[in-house]
Image 1 (spheres, rainbow, N blue to C red):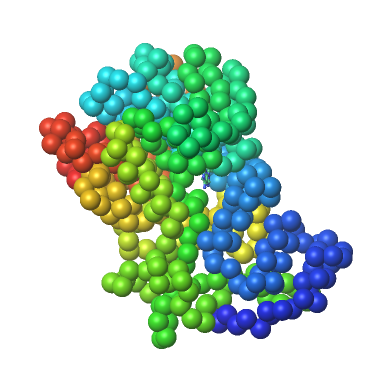
Image 2 (cartoon, rainbow, N blue to C red):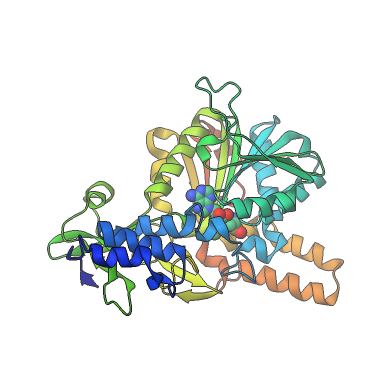
Length: 421
Ligand SMILES: C[S@@+](CC[C@H](N)C(=O)[O-])C[C@H]1O[C@@H](n2cnc3c(N)ncnc32)[C@H](O)[C@@H]1O
């Protein structure tokens, strides 16, 4: 780690060369060019800015322009590994929904990836005859992934023209809509803020770990922010981490005065979304399930990149690898429980959650009609998502319910979270 100096400020010769000539031909991507020019012109950027540009830049972002999830991508996820995952989540949703209301609900998924989880959920909903009581709302920033989701889920879908009226009446806040072969309506949104304010069940599976983070380091002189700068050697320009010379605005706003750790990661966007969702659930009713890798406020340096299923240097060839960081479940709980808006249960390990919801029984059932090859695949998927040394322990599950249900849920505890809360 080197100290950040602003010596390159005003280095327009290099900037001009960068923006004009063949100088950049050997650079890996447009994204590299944009980040490089930005840092050269304005100085080092925060890691949050670096992550946001790389993951969700509208024309050259990692998620916005590619399908990178699954065996052939850079990383895979529980719903992509085993259908058991989505089936168990579906059973959990119905169980909790029916305890609260018999009315229709909005099923909202944040960051649905390839649409596999929602597709597995809908299959179970169909078997249990509840499809006529739901509409599906997908919050997806990526046009490429939203097309893949539409292909998987819908018999027809079309883009919508966004229309926002002040009084909300006749507003169109979704950018695409479609319908499944069973007649379920599906809507796509860029942001959770656009989802209609009705009783909703939110699912976020490996969504929050993809949101940008700020990184802070305690030094002899106090807290400093870790920024991304460039090494300015003409023949081998690269990105590098530097420390801010002074505490940045983010140091002042996002760090708690009681912070004990020496290195801290904070995702303001995660906090904003959890806050919005908490207010939503408190005002409109519903509940939420978050599944992700994370910690309870004790972890420090978790920022990492994945390229073709291997760890990768996050500063190398930006835009080619997935960037991610563990989520802070304790902060999520604190935000949700503020002013007694919600109560939370968990986090519990994915293994414990899936097992207490009956994944072993479901495994036995689907093995009965499987061929030998299928059996092998199903069992290997099951082990991958439940074993302690695989995804079973490092992934955790946290649930959120309106505070008014506290006594109700004491009588009828939330499945998978018995003895929690
Ligand atoms: C790590 S993938 C997880 C996909 C899926 N849930 C799964 O488990 O297979 C993250 C998903 O969140 C979406 N995403 C990332 N940042 C987002 C944002 N700011 N707003 C909405 N969606 C976002 C990505 O496009 C992708 O669909």
